[in-house]
Amino acid sequence: MLNVGERSAEDLAEKYGTPLYVYDAAIIRRQIERVKKAFSALPFRPFYAMKANGALAILDRIRSNGFGCDCVSPGEIYIARRAGFTADEIWFTCSNVSDEDLRAVGDARIVVNVNSISEIDRALTLELQNPMALRVNTDVGAGHHADVVTAGGGVKFGIDLAEVREARMIVEDSGRKVVGLHAHIGSGIDDLAPLIESARRLLELSADFANLRWVNFGGGISIPYRPGDPEFPIDDYGRELTRIADRLLRARDLTAILEPGRYVVAQSGYLLARVTAKRISGGLWWLGCDTGFNHLVRPSKYGAYHHIVNATRKAKTKEEYVVAGNLCESGDVFTRDAMGNVIPRKLDHTEVGDLIAFCDAGAYGFSMASHYNARLLPPEIMVDGPSARIIRERQTLEDLVKGQR
Ligand code: LLP
Image (tube, rainbow, N blue to C red; front, side, top):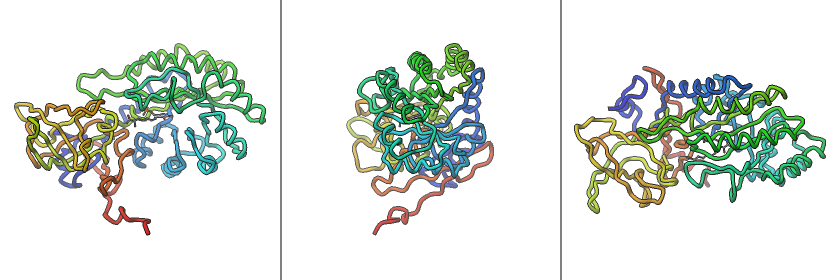
């Protein structure tokens, strides 16, 4: 049995159908408050990384709580503007963007956070009038999987420390100012040390920049995905960052920025799915369900753990099941490790027709979903206490052929 807010998951699935993304507004509020409180001693502004979940109804809540927005594509800027973020509440963080992308930044108040000297050159050639920030590779990387470590050797992000001086001079020689420094070192980080070390390096660099207004320490804060995992020590992060940054920031009238995505929304979200098959193969019990990696790719892409519960019944005993999706690929399994091995999971006794819930699916769930196998994207529901409402409608088959000739 599972409740989301004050609603039973079964009732929601009955009413809206499966597969279905459901978000609990109270959890989003709790996480927003945790972020605001932890860094409240600093001159501070949180920016939400909308790549984690770009639903307008979620963005609206986050915006009205004083967050800015971190965007990475013209599409994200468009969505952010539709959600009511003003241009000066948006940072656009480039990664190998095209001239067209750079032009689309459009509104001159959006900060362009450039990723390389090559991008600086292009932004200057295009005569972009936007305030400019430099994304630095502080050479400290971290993250839950190699694919999401975004600093250190061999990654595509950021201006190397050895090149930062040259990057600054290119901008300044053009008569422009560098108004921000940024480092985002990875995602799903559960250890404070690399975040603080990267922050320390960024602050050290800031001394060379006369016109700074912001120092942006990026996102990356993890959440406890497995039962028993500790909460990320966000208050310690706030205290440590305050200890190393507060005096410097205040002396120069700078604002600290953090860009959490996952931390704000992951725990609020569930992907609900109906069990469609139960079979034994290779000595293991397999459950099949009516969703797949097209809707929640993290387990098959990163071997990421999402806790799975039976939302229909509570049994006296737990049983071991491999949980697989409905796509035509053997890798469409939700209970895998990072090597791709199938790992059975303990669940309450489950039968065909039961509802199962993939927990902590609010971040990088829907936002990474695809139409693979011509499956429709799931609708999204926001629950707030006793109320539930559709925030994204179920698609129709027509959506699969829209725009095609
Ligand atoms: N800022 C920048 C520039 C980023 O690239 C990211 C995430 C964030 C902030 C937010 O990071 P967060 O606080 O959510 O860790 N798809 C992967 C995560 C990729 C993160 C990409 N960048 C996953 O499902 O684990």
